[in-house]
Image (tube, helix red, strand yellow):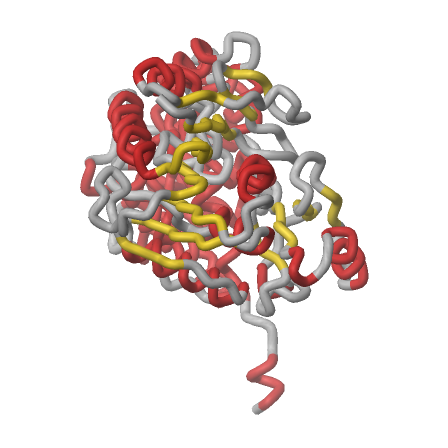
Length: 450
Protein backbone atom coordinates (compact mmCIF):
# COMPACT_ATOMS: atom_id res chain seq x y z
CA UNK A 1 0.00 0.00 0.00
CA UNK A 2 2.80 2.46 0.94
CA UNK A 3 4.70 1.60 -2.23
CA UNK A 4 1.67 2.42 -4.34
CA UNK A 5 1.11 5.68 -2.51
CA UNK A 6 4.73 6.77 -3.03
CA UNK A 7 5.02 5.64 -6.64
CA UNK A 8 5.73 8.31 -9.27
CA UNK A 9 2.67 9.54 -11.18
CA UNK A 10 1.76 7.56 -14.27
CA UNK A 11 2.13 9.01 -17.77
CA UNK A 12 -1.63 9.52 -17.83
CA UNK A 13 -1.43 11.30 -14.45
CA UNK A 14 1.30 13.62 -15.69
CA UNK A 15 -0.74 14.37 -18.80
CA UNK A 16 -3.82 15.14 -16.72
CA UNK A 17 -1.78 17.46 -14.48
CA UNK A 18 -0.28 19.16 -17.53
CA UNK A 19 -3.71 19.79 -19.00
CA UNK A 20 -5.06 21.04 -15.67
CA UNK A 21 -2.31 23.64 -15.14
CA UNK A 22 -2.73 24.92 -18.71
CA UNK A 23 -6.51 25.14 -18.34
CA UNK A 24 -6.01 27.10 -15.10
CA UNK A 25 -3.57 29.44 -16.85
CA UNK A 26 -6.05 29.97 -19.68
CA UNK A 27 -8.79 30.90 -17.22
CA UNK A 28 -6.45 33.36 -15.50
CA UNK A 29 -5.31 34.93 -18.76
CA UNK A 30 -8.68 35.28 -20.49
CA UNK A 31 -9.68 38.47 -18.56
CA UNK A 32 -6.24 39.98 -19.22
CA UNK A 33 -6.53 39.30 -22.94
CA UNK A 34 -9.93 41.00 -22.94
CA UNK A 35 -8.48 43.97 -21.02
CA UNK A 36 -10.82 43.32 -18.09
CA UNK A 37 -8.52 41.79 -15.46
CA UNK A 38 -4.95 41.58 -14.23
CA UNK A 39 -2.51 39.01 -12.89
CA UNK A 40 -2.93 40.15 -9.29
CA UNK A 41 -5.38 37.34 -8.49
CA UNK A 42 -3.24 34.39 -9.59
CA UNK A 43 -3.08 32.99 -6.07
CA UNK A 44 -6.87 32.62 -6.12
CA UNK A 45 -6.71 29.95 -8.83
CA UNK A 46 -6.73 26.32 -7.73
CA UNK A 47 -3.45 24.77 -8.85
CA UNK A 48 -1.66 21.91 -7.10
CA UNK A 49 1.46 22.99 -5.23
CA UNK A 50 3.96 21.24 -7.51
CA UNK A 51 2.53 23.05 -10.58
CA UNK A 52 2.31 26.56 -9.16
CA UNK A 53 5.72 27.64 -10.46
CA UNK A 54 4.80 26.47 -13.98
CA UNK A 55 1.39 28.12 -13.68
CA UNK A 56 2.91 31.50 -12.85
CA UNK A 57 5.64 31.13 -15.48
CA UNK A 58 2.99 30.45 -18.12
CA UNK A 59 0.84 33.43 -17.09
CA UNK A 60 3.63 35.97 -16.70
CA UNK A 61 5.56 34.75 -19.72
CA UNK A 62 2.52 34.86 -21.98
CA UNK A 63 1.73 38.43 -20.90
CA UNK A 64 5.36 39.44 -21.38
CA UNK A 65 5.43 38.18 -24.99
CA UNK A 66 1.79 38.89 -25.86
CA UNK A 67 2.30 41.14 -28.93
CA UNK A 68 4.30 38.46 -30.76
CA UNK A 69 2.01 35.65 -29.62
CA UNK A 70 -1.11 37.44 -30.84
CA UNK A 71 0.51 38.30 -34.16
CA UNK A 72 1.44 34.65 -34.70
CA UNK A 73 -2.01 33.49 -33.62
CA UNK A 74 -3.48 35.75 -36.29
CA UNK A 75 -1.36 33.97 -38.91
CA UNK A 76 -2.23 30.49 -37.65
CA UNK A 77 -6.02 30.92 -37.41
CA UNK A 78 -8.36 31.01 -40.37
CA UNK A 79 -10.60 33.34 -38.37
CA UNK A 80 -10.32 34.74 -34.84
CA UNK A 81 -12.09 33.16 -31.89
CA UNK A 82 -15.23 34.84 -30.60
CA UNK A 83 -14.96 36.90 -27.40
CA UNK A 84 -16.78 34.17 -25.46
CA UNK A 85 -13.90 31.84 -26.35
CA UNK A 86 -11.17 34.06 -24.90
CA UNK A 87 -10.09 31.08 -22.79
CA UNK A 88 -9.41 29.08 -25.98
CA UNK A 89 -7.53 32.05 -27.42
CA UNK A 90 -5.51 32.07 -24.18
CA UNK A 91 -4.69 28.38 -24.65
CA UNK A 92 -3.39 29.06 -28.14
CA UNK A 93 -1.22 31.92 -26.87
CA UNK A 94 0.03 29.70 -24.03
CA UNK A 95 0.95 27.01 -26.54
CA UNK A 96 2.82 29.43 -28.78
CA UNK A 97 4.70 30.84 -25.80
CA UNK A 98 5.77 27.37 -24.69
CA UNK A 99 7.02 26.42 -28.15
CA UNK A 100 9.02 29.63 -28.55
CA UNK A 101 10.26 30.41 -25.05
CA UNK A 102 10.08 27.45 -22.65
CA UNK A 103 12.13 24.27 -22.48
CA UNK A 104 9.14 21.98 -22.57
CA UNK A 105 9.17 19.13 -25.10
CA UNK A 106 7.13 20.10 -28.16
CA UNK A 107 4.98 16.97 -28.04
CA UNK A 108 3.99 17.73 -24.43
CA UNK A 109 3.26 21.36 -25.24
CA UNK A 110 1.02 20.49 -28.18
CA UNK A 111 -0.76 17.53 -26.63
CA UNK A 112 -1.39 19.00 -23.18
CA UNK A 113 -2.30 22.48 -24.40
CA UNK A 114 -4.79 21.15 -26.95
CA UNK A 115 -6.12 18.61 -24.47
CA UNK A 116 -6.73 21.36 -21.89
CA UNK A 117 -9.60 22.61 -24.05
CA UNK A 118 -11.63 19.62 -22.83
CA UNK A 119 -11.24 20.86 -19.25
CA UNK A 120 -12.68 24.18 -20.37
CA UNK A 121 -15.73 22.35 -21.77
CA UNK A 122 -14.69 23.09 -25.36
CA UNK A 123 -13.59 19.82 -26.88
CA UNK A 124 -14.19 21.21 -30.39
CA UNK A 125 -11.11 23.40 -29.89
CA UNK A 126 -8.67 20.52 -29.44
CA UNK A 127 -8.29 19.93 -33.18
CA UNK A 128 -7.97 23.65 -33.91
CA UNK A 129 -5.27 24.12 -31.28
CA UNK A 130 -3.46 20.96 -32.33
CA UNK A 131 -3.40 22.09 -35.95
CA UNK A 132 -2.21 25.61 -35.18
CA UNK A 133 0.59 24.51 -32.89
CA UNK A 134 1.82 21.81 -35.26
CA UNK A 135 1.88 24.33 -38.10
CA UNK A 136 3.95 26.69 -35.93
CA UNK A 137 6.42 23.86 -35.34
CA UNK A 138 6.81 23.46 -39.10
CA UNK A 139 6.88 27.15 -40.06
CA UNK A 140 8.32 28.76 -36.95
CA UNK A 141 11.22 30.65 -38.57
CA UNK A 142 9.22 32.00 -41.50
CA UNK A 143 6.23 33.08 -39.43
CA UNK A 144 8.32 34.85 -36.79
CA UNK A 145 10.30 36.71 -39.45
CA UNK A 146 7.04 37.82 -41.04
CA UNK A 147 5.38 39.17 -37.88
CA UNK A 148 8.58 40.72 -36.53
CA UNK A 149 8.57 43.25 -39.37
CA UNK A 150 6.23 45.19 -37.09
CA UNK A 151 8.34 46.93 -34.39
CA UNK A 152 5.50 46.53 -31.88
CA UNK A 153 5.77 42.76 -32.34
CA UNK A 154 9.56 42.58 -32.44
CA UNK A 155 9.93 44.72 -29.30
CA UNK A 156 6.94 43.13 -27.51
CA UNK A 157 5.23 46.45 -26.72
CA UNK A 158 1.97 47.90 -28.06
CA UNK A 159 2.57 50.65 -30.59
CA UNK A 160 1.44 53.49 -28.30
CA UNK A 161 3.89 52.37 -25.64
CA UNK A 162 6.74 52.50 -28.18
CA UNK A 163 5.70 56.01 -29.21
CA UNK A 164 5.56 57.21 -25.59
CA UNK A 165 8.95 55.70 -24.71
CA UNK A 166 10.60 57.00 -27.88
CA UNK A 167 9.35 60.54 -27.21
CA UNK A 168 10.48 60.42 -23.58
CA UNK A 169 13.84 58.74 -24.11
CA UNK A 170 14.95 58.97 -27.76
CA UNK A 171 18.37 57.48 -26.99
CA UNK A 172 17.21 54.83 -24.55
CA UNK A 173 13.75 53.61 -25.60
CA UNK A 174 14.98 50.38 -27.17
CA UNK A 175 17.04 49.55 -24.08
CA UNK A 176 13.98 50.26 -21.91
CA UNK A 177 11.90 47.86 -24.01
CA UNK A 178 14.60 45.20 -23.78
CA UNK A 179 14.76 45.58 -19.98
CA UNK A 180 10.94 45.43 -19.76
CA UNK A 181 10.96 42.08 -21.57
CA UNK A 182 13.25 40.36 -19.04
CA UNK A 183 11.94 39.35 -15.58
CA UNK A 184 13.41 41.57 -12.89
CA UNK A 185 15.76 40.05 -10.31
CA UNK A 186 14.68 39.28 -6.76
CA UNK A 187 16.16 41.93 -4.49
CA UNK A 188 16.04 41.92 -0.71
CA UNK A 189 16.15 44.69 1.88
CA UNK A 190 18.06 43.79 5.02
CA UNK A 191 16.54 44.93 8.32
CA UNK A 192 19.44 46.69 10.04
CA UNK A 193 17.87 46.04 13.43
CA UNK A 194 19.10 42.46 12.99
CA UNK A 195 22.48 43.09 11.36
CA UNK A 196 23.96 44.54 8.20
CA UNK A 197 23.78 43.21 4.67
CA UNK A 198 27.32 41.78 4.73
CA UNK A 199 26.29 39.58 7.65
CA UNK A 200 23.16 38.52 5.83
CA UNK A 201 25.14 37.76 2.68
CA UNK A 202 27.16 35.30 4.79
CA UNK A 203 23.90 33.73 6.01
CA UNK A 204 22.74 33.32 2.43
CA UNK A 205 26.05 31.75 1.43
CA UNK A 206 25.80 29.31 4.34
CA UNK A 207 22.34 28.34 3.13
CA UNK A 208 23.66 27.79 -0.40
CA UNK A 209 21.86 30.83 -1.84
CA UNK A 210 24.08 32.84 -4.25
CA UNK A 211 23.62 36.61 -3.96
CA UNK A 212 25.42 39.92 -4.42
CA UNK A 213 25.32 43.36 -2.84
CA UNK A 214 23.29 46.05 -4.58
CA UNK A 215 25.30 48.90 -6.08
CA UNK A 216 23.25 51.85 -4.83
CA UNK A 217 20.93 50.77 -2.00
CA UNK A 218 22.96 50.35 1.21
CA UNK A 219 20.55 47.74 2.58
CA UNK A 220 20.04 45.84 -0.68
CA UNK A 221 21.06 42.31 -1.70
CA UNK A 222 20.11 40.74 -5.04
CA UNK A 223 19.69 36.99 -5.40
CA UNK A 224 21.09 35.21 -8.44
CA UNK A 225 17.78 33.37 -8.81
CA UNK A 226 14.32 34.04 -7.33
CA UNK A 227 13.07 31.71 -4.62
CA UNK A 228 10.20 31.29 -2.18
CA UNK A 229 10.53 33.87 0.61
CA UNK A 230 9.87 31.20 3.22
CA UNK A 231 13.23 29.64 2.32
CA UNK A 232 15.14 32.86 3.11
CA UNK A 233 17.05 32.81 6.42
CA UNK A 234 15.20 34.88 9.00
CA UNK A 235 12.33 35.95 6.77
CA UNK A 236 9.60 34.85 9.18
CA UNK A 237 11.46 36.63 12.00
CA UNK A 238 11.56 39.93 10.10
CA UNK A 239 15.26 39.97 9.28
CA UNK A 240 14.70 40.58 5.58
CA UNK A 241 12.04 41.75 3.10
CA UNK A 242 11.63 41.75 -0.67
CA UNK A 243 12.03 45.21 -2.20
CA UNK A 244 13.59 46.46 -5.44
CA UNK A 245 16.76 48.53 -5.19
CA UNK A 246 15.11 51.64 -6.68
CA UNK A 247 12.34 51.58 -4.08
CA UNK A 248 14.90 51.33 -1.28
CA UNK A 249 16.36 54.70 -2.29
CA UNK A 250 13.39 56.56 -0.77
CA UNK A 251 14.87 56.02 2.69
CA UNK A 252 18.28 57.18 1.44
CA UNK A 253 16.76 60.46 0.25
CA UNK A 254 14.67 61.09 3.37
CA UNK A 255 17.39 60.03 5.81
CA UNK A 256 19.24 63.38 5.93
CA UNK A 257 15.93 65.11 6.69
CA UNK A 258 14.55 62.91 9.46
CA UNK A 259 17.62 61.29 11.07
CA UNK A 260 18.62 64.51 12.93
CA UNK A 261 15.08 64.87 14.32
CA UNK A 262 14.31 61.97 16.72
CA UNK A 263 10.58 61.50 16.94
CA UNK A 264 10.02 63.33 13.63
CA UNK A 265 6.44 63.21 12.42
CA UNK A 266 6.38 61.52 9.00
CA UNK A 267 3.54 60.79 6.59
CA UNK A 268 3.65 57.95 4.07
CA UNK A 269 0.79 58.75 1.72
CA UNK A 270 -0.42 56.03 -0.67
CA UNK A 271 1.62 53.65 1.49
CA UNK A 272 0.57 50.17 0.30
CA UNK A 273 2.03 47.60 0.09
CA UNK A 274 4.23 49.05 2.84
CA UNK A 275 7.82 48.42 1.80
CA UNK A 276 8.93 52.04 2.13
CA UNK A 277 6.90 52.44 5.33
CA UNK A 278 8.77 49.54 6.91
CA UNK A 279 12.17 50.66 5.65
CA UNK A 280 11.79 54.10 7.25
CA UNK A 281 10.73 52.54 10.55
CA UNK A 282 13.64 50.09 10.49
CA UNK A 283 16.15 52.91 10.11
CA UNK A 284 14.81 55.92 12.00
CA UNK A 285 13.22 56.91 15.30
CA UNK A 286 10.05 58.50 13.88
CA UNK A 287 6.34 58.89 14.50
CA UNK A 288 4.96 57.58 11.20
CA UNK A 289 1.43 57.76 9.86
CA UNK A 290 0.67 55.58 6.84
CA UNK A 291 -2.40 56.27 4.71
CA UNK A 292 -3.95 54.32 1.85
CA UNK A 293 -7.38 54.37 0.25
CA UNK A 294 -7.53 50.59 -0.33
CA UNK A 295 -8.55 48.68 2.80
CA UNK A 296 -7.29 45.33 1.47
CA UNK A 297 -3.89 46.75 0.57
CA UNK A 298 -3.72 48.54 3.93
CA UNK A 299 -4.22 45.16 5.60
CA UNK A 300 -1.09 43.97 3.78
CA UNK A 301 0.82 46.89 5.28
CA UNK A 302 -0.38 45.87 8.73
CA UNK A 303 0.76 42.27 8.13
CA UNK A 304 4.18 43.47 6.95
CA UNK A 305 4.69 45.65 9.99
CA UNK A 306 3.61 42.82 12.29
CA UNK A 307 6.15 40.42 10.75
CA UNK A 308 8.89 43.03 11.15
CA UNK A 309 7.88 44.03 14.67
CA UNK A 310 7.29 47.67 13.69
CA UNK A 311 4.64 50.17 14.76
CA UNK A 312 2.95 52.91 12.73
CA UNK A 313 -0.40 54.68 12.77
CA UNK A 314 -2.40 53.26 9.86
CA UNK A 315 -5.40 55.04 8.40
CA UNK A 316 -7.69 54.19 5.52
CA UNK A 317 -8.17 57.44 3.64
CA UNK A 318 -7.99 59.30 0.36
CA UNK A 319 -4.82 61.38 0.21
CA UNK A 320 -6.54 63.87 -2.11
CA UNK A 321 -8.65 64.85 0.94
CA UNK A 322 -7.77 65.60 4.58
CA UNK A 323 -10.51 63.77 6.44
CA UNK A 324 -7.95 61.43 8.01
CA UNK A 325 -5.57 64.22 9.16
CA UNK A 326 -5.53 65.34 12.81
CA UNK A 327 -4.29 68.85 11.99
CA UNK A 328 -0.70 68.42 13.21
CA UNK A 329 1.86 69.27 10.48
CA UNK A 330 4.41 66.71 9.31
CA UNK A 331 8.18 67.11 9.29
CA UNK A 332 8.43 64.95 6.17
CA UNK A 333 6.01 63.47 3.65
CA UNK A 334 6.63 60.57 1.31
CA UNK A 335 4.26 60.64 -1.67
CA UNK A 336 4.73 57.43 -3.63
CA UNK A 337 2.12 58.48 -6.15
CA UNK A 338 -0.14 56.18 -8.19
CA UNK A 339 1.29 56.05 -11.70
CA UNK A 340 1.40 54.18 -15.00
CA UNK A 341 3.86 51.60 -13.65
CA UNK A 342 5.92 52.10 -16.80
CA UNK A 343 9.11 51.52 -14.81
CA UNK A 344 8.03 48.12 -13.47
CA UNK A 345 6.56 46.50 -16.59
CA UNK A 346 9.07 43.67 -16.25
CA UNK A 347 7.45 42.74 -12.91
CA UNK A 348 3.89 43.41 -14.06
CA UNK A 349 3.82 42.56 -17.77
CA UNK A 350 0.02 42.79 -17.90
CA UNK A 351 0.54 46.57 -17.75
CA UNK A 352 1.36 46.45 -21.46
CA UNK A 353 -2.15 45.20 -22.19
CA UNK A 354 -4.17 46.94 -19.47
CA UNK A 355 -2.83 50.50 -19.68
CA UNK A 356 -4.37 52.88 -22.24
CA UNK A 357 -2.97 56.16 -23.63
CA UNK A 358 -5.83 58.00 -21.91
CA UNK A 359 -4.61 56.70 -18.53
CA UNK A 360 -1.50 58.90 -18.54
CA UNK A 361 -3.20 62.33 -18.39
CA UNK A 362 -5.74 60.94 -15.92
CA UNK A 363 -2.95 59.72 -13.63
CA UNK A 364 -1.03 62.99 -14.02
CA UNK A 365 -4.13 64.86 -12.90
CA UNK A 366 -4.43 62.61 -9.83
CA UNK A 367 -0.75 63.12 -8.97
CA UNK A 368 -1.22 66.89 -9.21
CA UNK A 369 -4.21 66.77 -6.84
CA UNK A 370 -2.21 64.69 -4.36
CA UNK A 371 0.70 67.13 -4.41
CA UNK A 372 -1.56 70.15 -4.01
CA UNK A 373 -3.52 68.56 -1.16
CA UNK A 374 -0.56 67.24 0.84
CA UNK A 375 1.78 70.23 0.56
CA UNK A 376 -0.12 72.35 3.15
CA UNK A 377 0.23 69.46 5.64
CA UNK A 378 4.01 69.96 5.68
CA UNK A 379 5.54 72.26 8.29
CA UNK A 380 7.76 75.14 7.12
CA UNK A 381 11.25 73.74 6.63
CA UNK A 382 9.84 70.26 6.04
CA UNK A 383 10.52 68.01 3.04
CA UNK A 384 8.20 66.19 0.64
CA UNK A 385 9.70 63.32 -1.35
CA UNK A 386 7.77 62.65 -4.57
CA UNK A 387 8.25 59.19 -6.09
CA UNK A 388 6.80 57.15 -8.94
CA UNK A 389 7.67 53.83 -10.56
CA UNK A 390 7.25 55.52 -13.94
CA UNK A 391 9.64 56.57 -16.72
CA UNK A 392 7.20 59.02 -18.37
CA UNK A 393 7.97 62.76 -18.02
CA UNK A 394 4.26 63.68 -17.75
CA UNK A 395 4.21 61.89 -14.39
CA UNK A 396 7.69 62.91 -13.30
CA UNK A 397 9.78 65.90 -14.39
CA UNK A 398 6.86 67.72 -16.00
CA UNK A 399 4.65 67.06 -12.99
CA UNK A 400 7.19 68.56 -10.59
CA UNK A 401 7.87 71.52 -12.90
CA UNK A 402 4.15 72.32 -12.89
CA UNK A 403 3.98 72.07 -9.12
CA UNK A 404 7.02 74.29 -8.53
CA UNK A 405 5.72 76.88 -10.98
CA UNK A 406 2.50 77.49 -9.05
CA UNK A 407 3.51 76.73 -5.44
CA UNK A 408 5.18 79.59 -3.53
CA UNK A 409 7.86 78.37 -1.14
CA UNK A 410 8.35 75.00 -2.85
CA UNK A 411 12.02 74.48 -3.69
CA UNK A 412 13.61 71.38 -5.20
CA UNK A 413 16.74 70.29 -3.35
CA UNK A 414 19.52 69.05 -5.57
CA UNK A 415 20.02 65.32 -6.14
CA UNK A 416 23.08 65.88 -8.32
CA UNK A 417 25.41 64.17 -5.85
CA UNK A 418 23.55 60.87 -6.16
CA UNK A 419 25.56 58.13 -7.89
CA UNK A 420 22.46 56.58 -9.44
CA UNK A 421 20.07 57.58 -12.20
CA UNK A 422 20.26 60.73 -14.29
CA UNK A 423 19.04 64.32 -13.96
CA UNK A 424 15.44 64.78 -15.07
CA UNK A 425 14.09 68.27 -14.54
CA UNK A 426 14.17 69.01 -10.81
CA UNK A 427 14.41 65.32 -9.96
CA UNK A 428 16.33 62.18 -10.78
CA UNK A 429 15.27 59.33 -13.03
CA UNK A 430 16.30 55.69 -12.95
CA UNK A 431 15.55 53.61 -16.03
CA UNK A 432 15.02 49.84 -15.68
CA UNK A 433 18.27 47.90 -15.88
CA UNK A 434 18.56 44.16 -16.58
CA UNK A 435 19.74 42.29 -13.46
CA UNK A 436 19.53 45.54 -11.52
CA UNK A 437 16.96 48.15 -10.46
CA UNK A 438 13.48 49.03 -11.73
CA UNK A 439 12.55 52.34 -13.36
CA UNK A 440 11.85 55.03 -10.76
CA UNK A 441 11.67 58.81 -10.38
CA UNK A 442 12.40 60.92 -7.29
CA UNK A 443 12.12 64.64 -6.56
CA UNK A 444 12.83 66.11 -3.11
CA UNK A 445 11.01 69.33 -2.33
CA UNK A 446 11.66 71.62 0.66
CA UNK A 447 9.09 74.04 2.06
CA UNK A 448 10.49 77.55 2.47
CA UNK A 449 8.50 80.49 3.89
CA UNK A 450 6.31 81.82 1.05
